[in-house]
Length: 97
Image (tube, rainbow, N blue to C red):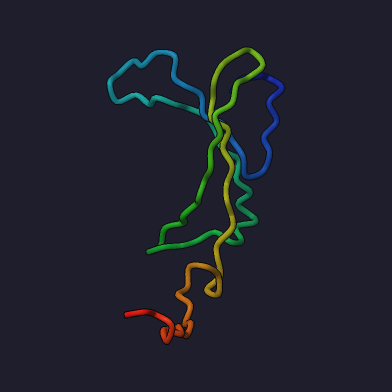
């Protein structure tokens, strides 16, 4: 973490660039994300796996380090939203061919 005063917020976290990699397979970024496990509403499960959608923003800390700020997106579109195909009638009587 960036500071000893760091306070986690629900559904948010950070990723910082690794300063030096000890091994080729070492991670390029490290960090944490705080997820309230007691409130897993609107989290999608696919094939027995919990799918957590996250978003990230490139930011700069007060000390000048660039990092990714993370947020859990708990929104799952309902079946009646834009993902479901709409059955609309099309009036093609004015099409010139």
